[in-house]
Image (cartoon, rainbow, N blue to C red; front, side):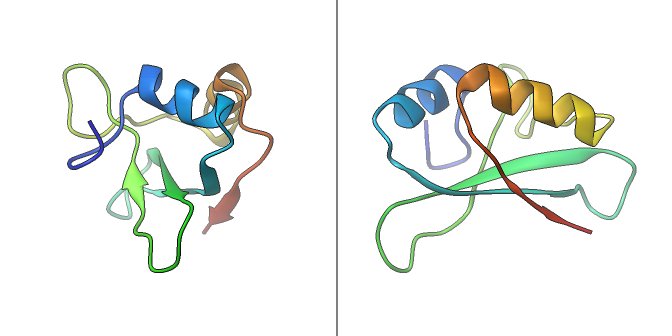
Length: 82
């Protein structure tokens, strides 16, 4: 689902179809965890967060962990917002 967030399986499919335009990693609510959002093609596209099966937002404890996830789903890179 893309309305409230995107699940890993859908993200993998979008990456395979080269539909992901940008990826952004940022701290979640200024806390210690990181979140990953994507922007699909088209002008004015909004950021869509990656979500977990149970939670509205998937989080990672470190940038290294986000990097491993991104590599695993086929993303070639992302921007980090500090």
